[in-house]
Length: 141
Image 1 (cartoon, helix red, strand yellow):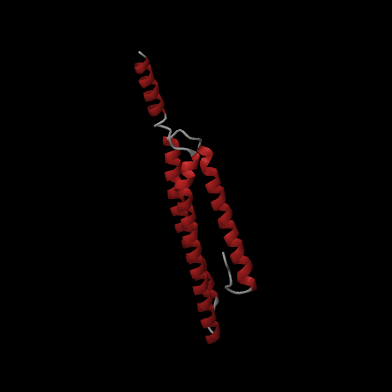
Image 2: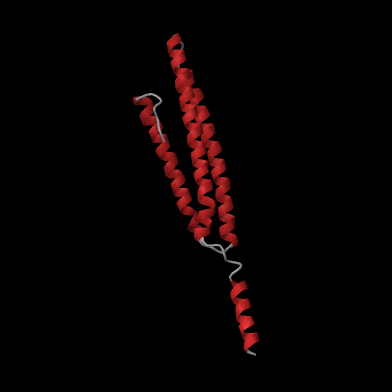
């Protein structure tokens, strides 16, 4: 009888936790590097776009050509980059939300990712606006 009771307790202990074995810490370890990679790639692409715009601006300025159309071109390309990053971020966030829901974890576990993303996006825009008018393309993120 003791053996049966011990096996029952062991079985319940092992298999009752299998459905909710994923912890918030596990999710952070799994997804935080992916969110950081999205940000890293976006910053590299943004820096490349800024460098390209600056070189093109300098070339047109030296030739005495009109530079204003460059502004619209690079604003459009920057917006496309922002949209692409947004799609990538939202796709990953959807995966996190699905895993959270599947494991009966609190939905608010995604809030720090969303908050960080919005803050990072806002800060990068402010850096661009501040530096583009002051010191050319020397913007570091």
